[in-house]
Length: 140
Image (cartoon, rainbow, N blue to C red; front, side, top):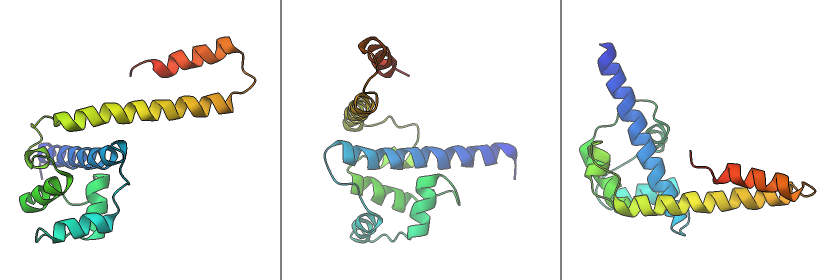
C-alpha cells in the first residue's frame, strides 16, 4: 500500500473521530446528557443500521479500520441532526449550529477552569490570580 494512501486513510480516520467527538461534546454543551453507546445504537437501529460497540469505539478513537460506509455515516449524521455531508465529505464546513454550540462549550469549560483555579488558589495574591486569569483568557 502506498504511503499516500496510508496517510489519506489516517487523515480520514482522524477527521471522522474529531467530528464524532465534536458532535458528542455539542450535545453536552447544549444542556443535554451525554449520549451513551446504547442511545446511539438504538437510534441507528431505528434507521435500519447496526453498529457494534467495538466499531463505535474505534471510530471515536480514530483507530482500526477506515469507516467509509455511507449508510452508517448518514445514519449517524441523522441521529445527531446534522447534514449527512458533515460525516461523509470532509470538505464540508462545520454546521453553524455546531459552531455556535462549540463556542458555548468553550466558554463553559473556561468558566469551570476559572472556578477550579479560584478554589484551588486560595491564599494567592490578587495580582498573581489576575495574571493567571489573563493567561486563561488568552485564545489558543
